[in-house]
Structure formats: structure tokens, C-alpha cells
Length: 448
Ligand SMILES: Cc1cc2nc3c(=O)[nH]c(=O)nc-3n(C[C@H](O)[C@H](O)[C@H](O)COP(=O)(O)OP(=O)(O)OC[C@H]3O[C@@H](n4cnc5c(N)ncnc54)[C@H](O)[C@@H]3O)c2cc1C
Ligand SMILES: NC(=O)c1ccc[n+]([C@@H]2O[C@H](COP(=O)([O-])OP(=O)(O)OC[C@H]3O[C@@H](n4cnc5c(N)ncnc54)[C@H](O)[C@@H]3O)[C@@H](O)[C@H]2O)c1
Image (tube, rainbow, N blue to C red):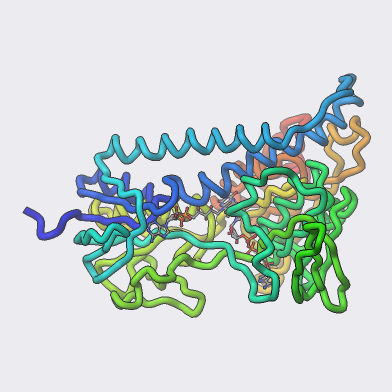
């Protein structure tokens, strides 16, 4: 007989929590999970998945316009937001069901309610039930940040954006990161008049800034109004229902929808962590070691709540490594080097490894190769939109240390190329590879 109700209690059924629960159960642990909202977490319910489906749905606007040059008569084509919104919601429902089945088929008990930590080996469910566990895993994710300015509550966040009753005529998106650029692209394609406001003079700071400049140029060309150095002072609701935003010296902007996309904070509030002795950093992130263990030996944490890398594949890996280490007798840590990432803007950006700026700051010799080209499809479509691929090479070893792409399907192209960068292949190895023609990705082996 175990001294505890379960070997593992996971708080949060998102990317990290679901993986950890399933793998721990497969190692023979008795596992329970608490989820206060919907099984699947941010990525499945209100993140990556519905976002990518909206990216696909919105891109038909351009595809249909381009189709004319390829001989298709698309007159009469029109868009219906409720159809896209409801079909995406139905797909999310389907996936939520599949995630629930993972628990059933692995013998994991799920509690559909909030749980808080009450001690090193104890949690309390919202219904008041106390449960003990040998280990507790905090996998509660992150929550959209909202700034402390008057009228901030007039804005929505990515939590609400998938359920809009109708599309606004005008939208202001505040922020300059992933979500801001992705939704600027989606709304713009769907005919919404988009203004992107950002307090600084840079966007997508972690990305190669030459690639970002290209995105800014193309976005403006498509009609997205990008306003940098915009100090968001306040928002007020006007008589006609519109929202008036005061940007101080940057001027006033009137809009029908305000969306905050200024980052996500670790979901650690009122979780009982402080009382249990779990150390948090100044941003509320749970502090963990490379083994995902917190300051309390029986409590671990993975995913966004630790604020290391806020990406689904990373949360999944952390959850998997935790379960293998603690229940599978196979301790291991995650390698955070060369994580490929993409911004599903229009066009998308994809990146792996060092930017030119980072390489210059750390390597003694840096070579940069560029290919600035127009995709064949864009040429025939009469679309004057160019792609840019950049390869960053360590001049002393010839190793490719970074790849940065903007252009159609760049995420799909980069995932494969990232294997070569992660493996430490040289520029010569890229050059030795015969081009696959005609394709956009052949540019990767043709850079001079
Ligand atoms: C709009 C958007 C788009 C994104 N797009 C991408 C993308 O394209 N690619 C990518 O890699 N990443 C993307 N992300 C990030 C990705 O969704 C997260 O990194 C990932 O979901 C983190 O997983 P997690 O397990 O840490 O937390 P989550 O998936 O957020 O899961 C945490 C779960 O815990 C639950 N919970 C919280 N507190 C409690 C409690 N006390 N009791 C019970 N349950 C609780 C929450 O309801 C939630 O379901 C996107 C995020 C957003 C918001
Ligand atoms: N494609 C993807 O992989 C993807 C997509 C969406 C989200 N995500 C993940 O979710 C996280 C959150 O996304 P996000 O776009 O909200 O955040 P982000 O960190 O990408 O960008 C936030 C931006 O808001 C700015 N900002 C911060 N505080 C501000 C304030 N008070 N006023 C004005 N601007 C402010 C920041 O300078 C930054 O540019 C990302 O960091 C990413 O890890 C990933």
C-alpha cells in the first residue's frame, strides 16, 4: 500500500501536463490530473491549433486573388466568419475529446476542476477534497498580460479572439511579438483594417532584425498600419461603441476592437505555491533546475509556468523528460540549443540558431549568406513580394550556426533544415547537396 493517494498529481492538462501524465502512467505510476478549463490546454484550445487554422482560413483571400492569374474565375467568392470560426471550434472540440481519451486509455484519473497546492505532497480540489501524492507537477501554463492603463479592460486577448461574434471593421493590436504579428496577418487577410501599435522601436526582438524589417515592409505593403514608439496611455469607449486610444505624442487611434498581445505571464497566482515553499522569480515563474525540480523536492514544474521557452514542443519535452526521470529510471535533461521557431505571420518567419547580431557578438569570424528572391508562384501571380533567406556561418569552422527565413511556407522548410543546423553541418555540406528544383527551399543549397 502506498502512503499516498497517487504517485503523481499533475495540475494542468496542457501540452506539458498531458505528456507527463501519460508517460508517467506508462511507467506504472498511478496518476491524477486536475484541469480547471478544457483538456488540451492553451495550444489545443486557444493557441497554436485554432491560430494555425485561422492562418490557413485567412490566406485563401490572397490565394483566391492570385488564382485569377492562374486561369481561375473566382468572381462571387466571399468569406463568412461564422463558418470559419465554428468549424475551427468544432475541430478544437474533437481534439479535446482525443486528449481526454489519452487519459482514459492510460488509466489516468482526471478531475475537471481547479486544484491548488496545500503542502509538499498535498493538493486541494475546488470541491474541497484533499488529495495526497508522492510527487506534484505544476503544469499550469501562462496567462495573457494586460497592462495597467485606464480602459485596458476594453481590450480582448488571445483567449477571446477565437470566439468573436463578428469580425470588426477596424482592429488595434497592441504588442510586437508572436501573437500580435500572427493576428495582424489573419485580420488583414480577412479584410479588417489593422493597426499594430508597439511601445518600442523593434518588433520580434529575438528574431534576426533584417528578416523582421522585411516583414514590416511587406505588412505595410499589405495595408497593416504599424506604429512604433506608441505609448499606450488609455482607451475609452465612445457613444457609438467604438474605442478611442490615446497614444500620447503618437496620436489618437479609433477602433472597433482592441486586442492585447504583450506577452504571457506564468500562471502561478493563488496556486498555494508560496505556502508550500516553492520559490518563484520576480515574474512569478516557478524556479526549477535542469531536472524540472522546484525548491521543494517533491514538487516539479514544466512548460510556460517556468517561463523558460514558451513553446508547445518544449513543454512536451520537459513533461516527457520529467516523467522518464522520476518514474522511468532514465534521468535526462532538455537540450535548449537550436530550437526551431516560427511566427505564422503573412508571410511567415522561421528561424533556428544564432541571428547575425548574436553571431557577431559571440564568434570571432562570421560569414553571412543571403538569398533575396521572388517565389515562382508570386511571379506568375503578379505579386511583388520577395522572400529572404539568411544563413549565418561560423567563419572559423564553416559550421552553419543560424538560418533565418521569411517567405511562403518558411516554417515547413525550416523544420527540415534545422536538423542540419542542429547536427552542426557545414556550409560545404549544404553546397554539396543537389538542389531540388523548382522549389523555394533549393535556395538553401544555392547561396553564394
Ligand atoms: C495564441 C497563441 C498561439 C500560440 N501558438 C503557438 C505555436 O504556433 N507554436 C508553439 O509552439 N506554441 C504556441 N503557443 C504557446 C503554447 O500554446 C504554449 O507554450 C503551451 O501551450 C504551453 O504548455 P503548458 O503545458 O506549459 O501550458 P498550457 O498548455 O497553457 O496548459 C496549462 C493548463 O493548466 C490549466 N490550469 C491552470 N491553473 C490550473 C489549476 N490551478 N488547476 C487546474 N488546472 C489549471 C489551464 O486551464 C491550462 O489548460 C501559442 C500560445 C498562444 C496563446
Ligand atoms: N508561433 C509560435 O510559436 C507562437 C505563437 C504565439 C505565441 N507563442 C508563445 O507565446 C508567447 C506569448 O506571445 P506574445 O505575442 O503575447 O508575446 P511576445 O513575448 O512574443 O511579445 C510581446 C511583445 O509585447 C511587448 N510588450 C510587453 N509589455 C508591453 C506593454 N506594457 N505595452 C506594450 N508592449 C508591450 C514586448 O516588448 C514584446 O514585443 C510568446 O513569447 C511565444 O513563446 C508562440
